Image (cartoon, rainbow, N blue to C red):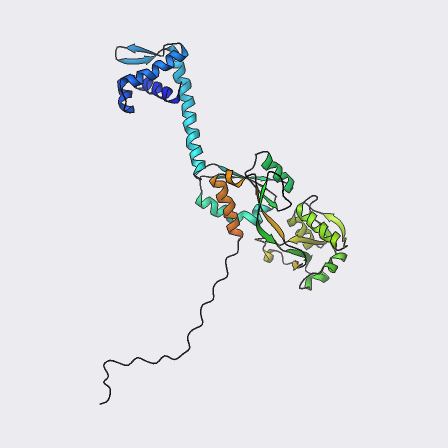
Length: 322
């Protein structure tokens, strides 16, 4: 029993004629009959009976017709959807990331991606940690994970997209607010608002403090970078956070972000199981995010104008003196 046999049988049931199906399939009536007989031999039951005008399905044939119609219809739909996914024209891209990542890292990419791929769905899953994002990849509940890049993880491919310099977020009236930059020694006396437990950014900061023998006083901890900056703006302490894309300083006049040049930037980007197995739509979304976060190349300055006074060309209508 093959799909072609079932398709031929369905066509005969619809047309009520072997010869009509043969014409539609550009084959002989004998070839169509052979397909039907092959089904009858395998099932051990007659499927068609002759009528005064053509053929009709037997009770067994009606049962097979109903099942084959639903099954082949569903299979044809699945094949069309798979081809659309393969070509990047449909399907769903599943992204797992932290609660603030879409706003700061993906908002522009979401708009541009939907404009180019209106039939592709985007499914965002919020995770409380990078470990949770990697677990979603391992469980095959996500295609892409936006994480803080950390040490290599078995079975996961990480690709940095953007490096985020560290800053100290302080209230505008804080004594440190007028500083142009922050030195490591300045961090010893801050009221530290600690970053999420077990996060890559927290481990990076803790490693820096241990290296310099610094341990700031910390009585407050938060679940994400945005909350850390909000608490700093409210005067509850000082937050050491990475510089976030799409951060609108004008909306936070009471907050100052002061660079900490001695801290190595924090890398963020994509994690996947295998890049080569991603759908075209997932690859397109990953590229859209990377493109939106890549600063444009500096404009090439125009060459300075030529100030040399040019010698005017002789007028061909003016005769030289004899």
